Image 1: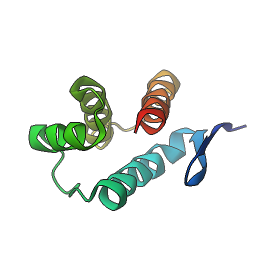
Image 2: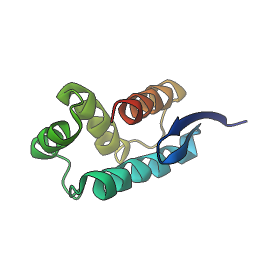
Image 3: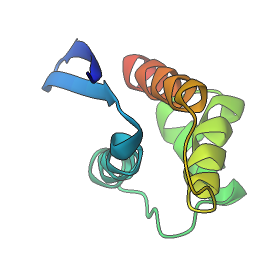
Image 4: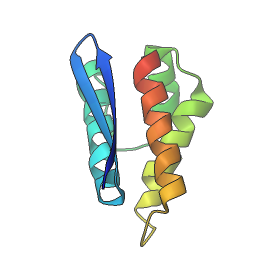
Length: 99
């Protein structure tokens, strides 16, 4: 059974599912959110991206960097461990609450 976290935001309900198969989808949703809300390109997730997103959101660069590192690293992993996935979703939840 898939665990789900729901948060109410000013834009509606945000649902995050803790499901290994959903990690790429959560990453895509995060990147789409950054593109549409903050008008930042997400084609290159580097230090400049992290600094620009920090400047637009006020969220600590280290928190953004952790999200970016997970997204970039996920491409190289054959499988995402439950603990890694739960940590990633907590990072996303924290980002959305603060942004």
